[in-house]
Image 1 (cartoon, rainbow, N blue to C red):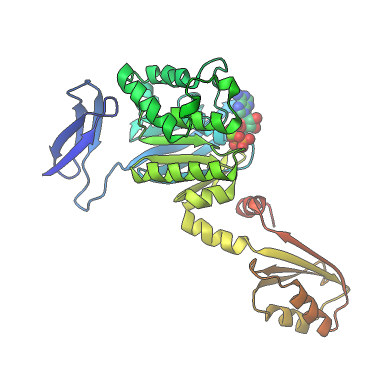
Image 2 (image 1 turned 30 degrees about the vertical axis):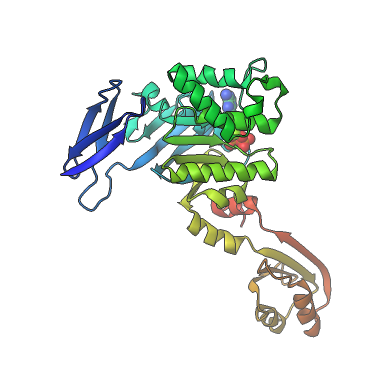
Length: 362
Ligand SMILES: Nc1ncnc2c1ncn2[C@@H]1O[C@H](COP(=O)(O)OP(=O)(O)OP(=O)(O)O)[C@@H](O)[C@H]1O
Ligand SMILES: [Mg+2]
């Protein structure tokens, strides 16, 4: 028999349960009567149903336009998932489906193993959501905004007050508690949006480009807060088009492009790929090249790859980003009697990675 203490998602009441490995049980909170389900871990200690979010073959069409095209991925409980993609890729559309603001045209979404379309309200209470542009009523005061959302979650008034004070303090907004939102800067609105997303003690926190337009200090604050919430067990879904942001905090990454998922991987695997693809490319142009000169360039420490292009008139050389090798390559080519006509370099960026992954860059 396994003994487990669970927390009611609605009233946070602690419930003790016992069961055998793999048992699936339904529960009713003795305090607030909220219904729920729990699966005990298997004998090997693994949960059958340890996914916080499961997206299966989801498509979203706006009339004839397919914004999200048959995407599938899953996020384990306790993960920090980075949802990466360029503008218009389908990130917000996916998030709106996960937060029940949009209905998928096709496919299935599960939150904690439960079909989202069957229990939208119940599941929404377990999710905190910070939209890309927090749309507050400008004439409302910060505290009133939070009470408005707190009422939606049916948080009792006294508890709500305490919670709002705590969250505003956490966001360094206490002195703006009774100030109208229209007097808030962009960063302050973002922080208020963040605080609002935490009102219901969410088990999943979904953040749509939370740090867009923020200064480095506030970005750092958001990052630290995300990490500390995650340490407390909150699953994080973070959308962004900033690679470094995702790399800094996420454990797993999904890349979406033109509505399609093109990679889902751990940050370590993606990091390894980026390390190779994050190198710098230098192009050398000349009249002609010799095999001896190519070999000499290949032998320079820090040169990753050398490609001969345009009928031996261009060398595409991938170099270790940490080293500035252009002068050394230049010297080697000159030593080998090559008459260089042009040198160009470029940094591989997110777009190149997309192109590489989608096969469009070749
Ligand atoms: N309500 C809508 N009606 C029609 N098209 C829409 C609607 N919402 C989004 N789209 C389209 O769907 C595509 C994906 O948009 P989405 O907002 O999901 O992108 P995104 O990845 O969040 O981009 P960004 O980084 O700019 O926020 C875009 O081409 C957009 O024009
Ligand atoms: Mg968006």
